[in-house]
Amino acid sequence: MYINNYLASKIFKILFLVVVVYGLYLSIFYAPHDLPPRLTLCSFAIQSNILVLLSTLYFLRFTESTRLRSIFRGSVLLSILAVGLIFHLILAPQLPAEPSNQFILANHLTHTISPLGFYLDWLLFDRKGQMQIADLPFWLIYPLLYGIAFVSQGTITDYYPYFFMDPGAVGYRGVLIWLAGLLAAFLLIALLILKIDISMEERKNLQRNS
Image 1 (cartoon, one colour):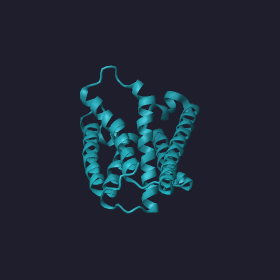
Image 2: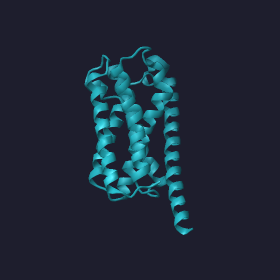
Image 3: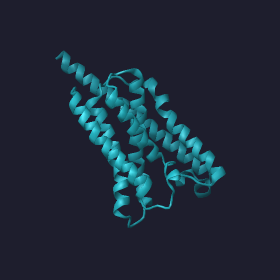
Image 4: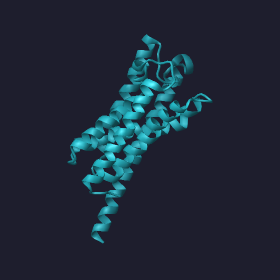
């Protein structure tokens, strides 16, 4: 599906931006945790939501389909979809049994609504057939750098954003297994994004030629 309507795209993006900003605001300043904002900003989810915010602002201003835009879209889309899937499949069971309403809302805005909204924005308003298999290394740069940086800094600060990065919790072998598994998951999600992009373009071409 592709909606070639500038006004609809603009309205969707503006409403989506409001949701993303509010989710970040709640998560950083009001969600009931003991972490100061500077440590909350170490979260992959928060950083990915910031990337969603910045990229949506960019897409709102610049609508032309370019190679760089496609790579940027794919990279952020991969990260934010991974945020949603990893949260619901791995991290949600670790949450407090009786979280506050603000905590629930903040998590759903940043881990559910933001991934779905950014995916829908791409699905509905971006031209398909722009992504390529050669984009994958660029898409994986941010997750790889994030994993290396925060595992490394944890050995100095003793702060790890996630339990699976902490050798004290899962052991060094466990950290490697977790990171390898997550990298495989990222790659799988990336291939799925590519598959959807290619399939939608092929369907469009079939309809055009029929």
